[in-house]
Amino acid sequence: MPRTLTAGLPEKIGRRATVRGWVHRRRRLSHVSFLVVRDRAGLAQVIVSDEPGRRQVDGLGEKTAVAVEGTVVANPKAPGGAELTDPRITVLGSASPPPVELWRPALAAGLPALLDHAPITWRHPAQAAVWRLAAASLRGFRHTLDERGFTEIQTPKLVGGSTESGATVFTVDYFGRPAYLAQSPQFYKQIMVGVFERVYEVGPVFRAEPHDTARHLAEYVSLDVELGFIDDHRDVLAVLREVLAGMLEAIRTDVPDAVAPAGARLPEVPERIPVIHFRDALALVGAHPDEPDLAPEHERRIGRWALEEHGSDFVAVEGHPARKRPFYTSPQPDDPRWTNSFDLLFRGLELVTGGQRLHEYADYAQALADRGEATGPYEPYLQAFRHGMPPHGGFALGLERWTARLVGADNIRRTTLFPRDLHRLTP
Image (cartoon, rainbow, N blue to C red; front, side):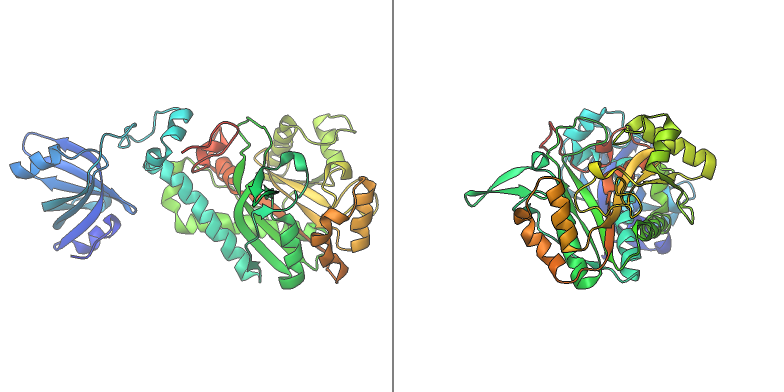
C-alpha cells in the first residue's frame, strides 16, 4: 500500500492507509493503547485494542521506525482530526532509548547536551522547526534573486590566498603546498559580475578567529550577493531589503506551522530601511568620534533607537571608516575618510555587511599601495579589473545569525545544525 503522510490522513477517512515514521509516544490504558507516530509532516494517533497488538506496542522503544497500516477514522481530538484503528504494525528499524525525552513539548537539556547529541536532539519537533525556518529562508533568498535576474554561482573553498587577512584563515596542506579555507567568496563573486552582472552564492565560509562568544562560529553558511551597474551602496541596500522581505514571505507561505514551535517573532521589513551615518551613530550612543567600530552595546542602543523612532527592527549604519574596511571598499566621494559601505543591524545585532566596491584597476593598485601591499599576490583577482568592470557592490548575510535573531536564541549554536567553533569538531 502506498505511503500516506500523517497530514494526509483526513483525506483517507473510511479507507485503509499506511503511515511510516518513528514512535513518538506510547500510552497504555486499561483497555486500549495509544501509539503516536511522527513523520516529516506531523503526528498520527494509532488506536490499539487487541492484546497482542498492545504487547507489541509495549515493546516498541521511542524513536523506533515503524510502518502502520490501519483504517482511518475521524476523531476531532486526534492530531489532524483523524486516527488509525485496527492497525498492523511493522518494525522497520529498532531503537535504543534516546538521550533526551523527545516526546516532551520542550527540550530541557542544556546547550552542551543539545550539541553533543545533535543527531538525536534535532529530531525534536521544536528543534526541527528552527531549521525549517532556515530552510524556508534559503528558498526565499534564492527565489527573490532568481526573479530579479541573478545567476547562482559556486566558488572554490580551497584558495591560494586570504581575502582580507592571513591571520584569520585556516591553512591546509594542498599537495605539499599551503592553501587556505575561503573566508568568503568575495573576490570570485566580484569577478563573476563581469560575466553575469548579477550573481549570488549560498555556501560555507571559514574564519580562524579565536572567538568564544555566543555570536561567532568558525564555519557558517553565508548568503552572498553581488550586482553590477549600480550608482552607489544604496542600490545594494535596496536589493537587500527585497531579499529580506522575500525570505520572510517564504517562511509565512511555506512553513507557517514552524513559527510558533520555534519561538520565532517575524518582523515586518519597512519599505525603506532607516539609515544612519556612522559618525551620527557614534554621537547617538555617546561614543568617541574617533571610534573605528561599533561595540555590541552600541549596536543594541542603535537598534532600540530604530525601533522607537522608526518602528523598524532593521537599521543600516552607513559610511564606516575606510581604515576599518577591506581595501576593495569604495570611498565616500565627498570625504574619503568614510566609505560607501553599510552594516545592517537586526534587533540590535549586526546581521549583514555590504557596500560598493572599487571597480578600476588603478584604484585597486593605489588602495593596496596605501596599505603597504603590492598588487602581485592579488593579480589573479585583479586581472578582471583591467578589462572593463562596472560599478558594483554586494552584501553577505549569515544564515545562522539570521535564524537566531528570528527565534530569539541566546546562542548562535542553537540555530546551527553541527556547529564548528573554537572547541567543537564533532559530531
